[in-house]
Amino acid sequence: MTIKMTLVLNTLESGNISEQIKALFADKNEEIEIVNTAEMKIAHCVGCNTCWLKTPGVCAIKDDYEIILKKLVATDNLWVVADTKFGFVDYRGKQVLDRLVPMLNMYIEIRDGWERHQLRYHPLNFGFIYKGNGNRELLEEWSERVARNMAGKSLGVMALDAPQTNANGNVTETATETATETAAGTAQDAAGTTAALPEHIVILSGSPRVKKNSNTNKIIQAFAEGLEKAGITHKLYSLSNHAEWDEAREAFMTNDNIIIAMPLFVECLPSLLLEFLSTLPTERKQPAKLSFILHGGFDEGHQLRLGEKFLQSLPAQLGCSCGGILVKGGSFLLRNRENSYIKKMTDKMLASYTAMGLSFAQNGNFMTLEAKKFTGPEKNPKIGILLFNLIFKRIVKKNFERIAQKWGCTEPLDRKPY
Ligand SMILES: Cc1cc2nc3c(=O)[nH]c(=O)nc-3n(C[C@H](O)[C@H](O)[C@H](O)COP(=O)(O)O)c2cc1C
Image: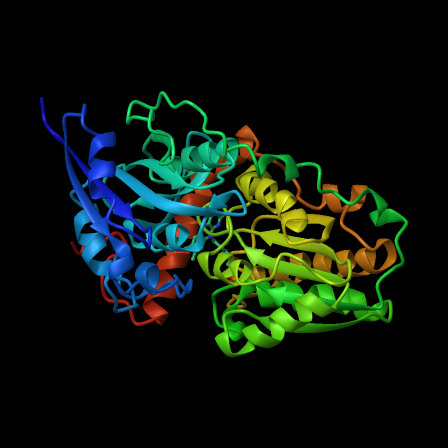
């Protein structure tokens, strides 16, 4: 029997827990390597796409993550050990997963009925070990989704605080696990529909991408046009610019109507946004309504549902009521205006965000039927999948190759550099 290679990325900051981690795998016939990432220099993924379109498989950020990428190409099982915040993986844990992108390539295929990026290497199984108050159900679903992204299977979720947990996935709940679950699904602001309509809205862009290249920014601009039509003013803060964080925090704490717009990154929020959120005080002097715009690259609505579930639980944890979540996929090409077909498509989508801006101005929330319908189809219909496989897949592939050429890429997009 071949021995499986298991890589454990321990992102916890305090104490050496290698022995505790090793004990979790004691009964497994696996070769385990534990890497303590807190001792490494690892930045947030900024979504620059260099690893897909310019230097295929090689990240543009020159930090210690390359050491991890080189280990991952020889790994069967990946476990991440992290603390939890807001019931979910904290930003340090999410950071090492957002940086996994070079393990995939730009090409798109449909796997198990879901739109997916092609694997650059082999399938990777994924498991998550957490400390603190994790929302176990959410973490399990997230773990499944991350594994599916990598064409692997979920290895399960283990709570580090529970001495009885082992790597077989038979985990007994700890007393702390369910503490944050109560907020999910109950934080929707029932009073939202009757509350005073907004006059001024603070909008935070949670995209790690620089403002001028960000699809989130395009969405916010279009949405704000709708607000303006109704005479509502707004102030935008872009979290990709660290210099704006202090002002953004101040605006968050002193305004009563806030929208955070963000792209989906590895099934949930980008690590950069999770970091910002974890710096916010949880108690505020005056009430506020917090609403969200969540968008992602793939078209299907169900790709965004785990992120939506997490966001539902967030306002209550930040001392706010929830104004609802506007959910939509298919944003990948918004910043691209390269031919008349793409331009027409993106103009149409941006116009629909302007209409939702107007709707938000009139209703004060995203809890309307109109907002619910905005997501579009949950899954691609069978005929859509068939057409994609027969025709569009090749067109999309050619399109990516053309963009890569423009970016000065001289390598095949599915190159395996390690
Ligand atoms: C690291 C990373 C992870 C991503 N993960 C997902 C994902 O899980 N699902 C999805 O639909 N799109 C995913 N995307 C695509 C982005 O959500 C999409 O391209 C979005 O339009 C980017 O918005 P921005 O330009 O404002 O950053 C990911 C992109 C990056 C860079």
